[in-house]
Image 1: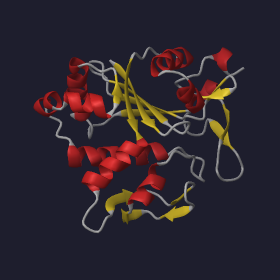
Image 2: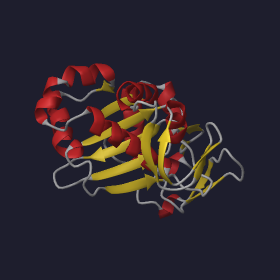
Image 3: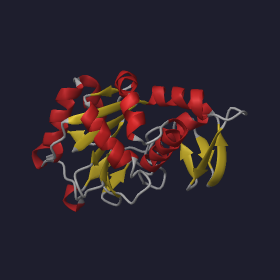
Image 4: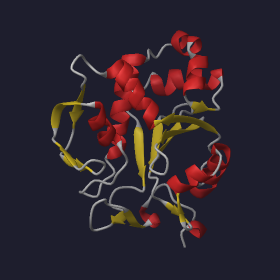
Length: 233
């Protein structure tokens, strides 16, 4: 089962494809800046219903994805505010490299840090870092995993009992069986080794010369997951 998880931030949304098929534990992390003809993937997401977006996405990357789960970044920040902040109003995180957040021009320093809600927002906002890497996907996943540990127990009883709440809180076409499969797959294996593939992969693309750094060109021949040729030529 392949599930498209959208970390919804309008045209700056990040797209994750989880493959929870038997014996497979893989994750595609797809940039919203990829251009399909003259429109970016993020722009397309804001322009069409999610069902049409799934169809376009599947055709563009030659992978069949019919299931989706959408989490708005604003809702995730609200969840952090309600359940994740400590007494001082900060969230403890471990930052794995120095970088500058383009949302507020704040310099984040490698190591254990305590972030305000506004700083968390900047920390997980989509961007290409100044070193030309898409490490924002790791930051987004770290925060999602952290919130999972604070608010979700990966047990079948928890998923079953809260299925209605999950459906209401996020956009999804997952049925209970699908949710249980995710519970015994991704949620249960969240800390297990997962094959992660960035699209586009590191060192296969160029970026603009000045901040905010934008995706410029992609050499799709060097990517394991390729955009269909007639969509970028």
